[in-house]
Image (cartoon, rainbow, N blue to C red; front, top):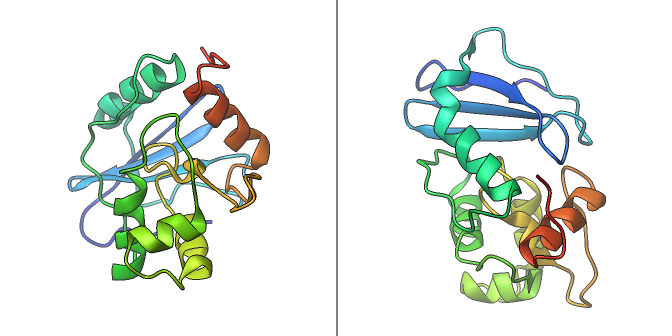
Length: 169
């Protein structure tokens, strides 16, 4: 998969993480994407992007602190691209406290659209900045884990990390 960032030239880098290799993409406006390189979609950098780990240094630092269990809340400029509905869902995802989970139905109610559970699920699945925008904190109404772009084992590991049941670094 390749994505185009029209507004300005994007910088990217690949990093190793406890949940597998990640592709990070940012532009002047902020972090645009975190891709699971070994996820369900094959990911590669756009040839127009600039390989620049230094431009993503703060993102890398905060991700490492998160994986070490030392950071509960990211403080990064984010610039996800999506529809107004998707952006509203992603904004609400950022309000789910570290270590807590909610259902898709609860998230639909939080965006004042209680009948939109399926649409919320689709927006959640389209989140371009997983981990930082914590879509892994949304689970089924029955308490079971449901789909995740990096795969359910990664979702399970992230939730275990946040419940202090696992240390990834």
